[in-house]
Amino acid sequence: MNNKEFIAGLAEKLSKDTKETTQMVNALIAEMSAQLEEENVLSIANFGTFEVKKKLERVVVNPATRQRMLVPPKLVINFKASPTFREKVNNN
Image (cartoon, rainbow, N blue to C red):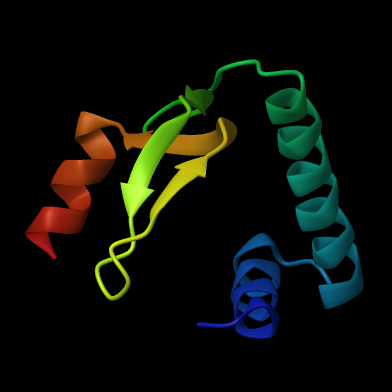
């Protein structure tokens, strides 16, 4: 499912037009992004939790050249599904 199909399905369920639904989805994504940029934990009931985690600096080895490289620390987004959501997905 691509973005256009998602918006169309959501618009149909909400009895809204696609333009209004697109604005709502964009606002939701913008707010989620803003919260994650501030490294806040974002919990959505019956769906899951998004949080920013710090990956430490580490050394990796290129298997082809055996060259060791240092990977700098970085921030990654982690998602943990709620038990309710996980159960719904596993039962389908």
